[in-house]
Image 1 (spheres, rainbow, N blue to C red):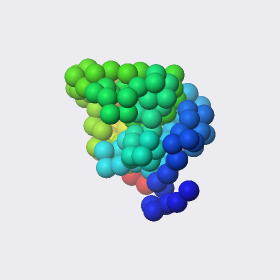
Image 2 (image 1 turned 60 degrees about the horizontal axis):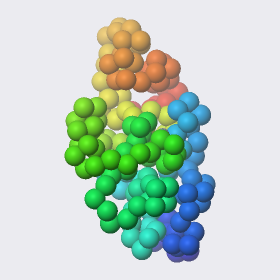
Image 3 (image 1 turned 180 degrees about the horizontal axis):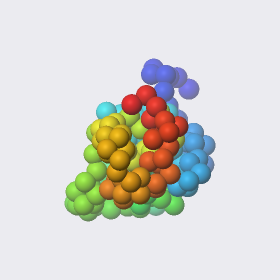
Length: 169
Ligand SMILES: [Zn+2]
């Protein structure tokens, strides 16, 4: 197995099994997500090389789980809305249109997701979100209200407040 970029994984096709892919991820106890931390591309999605191409880890799971065409016109969708997640139970297959509509609906900022790579928590939040959360906390807004606004647990807000997470932001 060779490695050109430290975090990028090259998985020979015969080792590209769900079990193997999942074994490279880190379980997130709160959400049940398996976070893929081996490297993310520019838009924050996990990727590695298998099936003779660089591929998103979540897509690889769907190919194996549902026996799909790697080149097919389909999208691996996260029911947990965590792009780094490779838990097969959190993945379903959708159309490109469906995925776009889903993203619009959730108003997700996928660009910021790469900043979540370094933490096992708060993968839904971006650095900009955390800046805004800190502003709201400083302004005395209730943590529960902030949590609702960003669609995360109050614990997440509390941990940001106490700098248990996102201390670098
Ligand atoms: Zn998940």
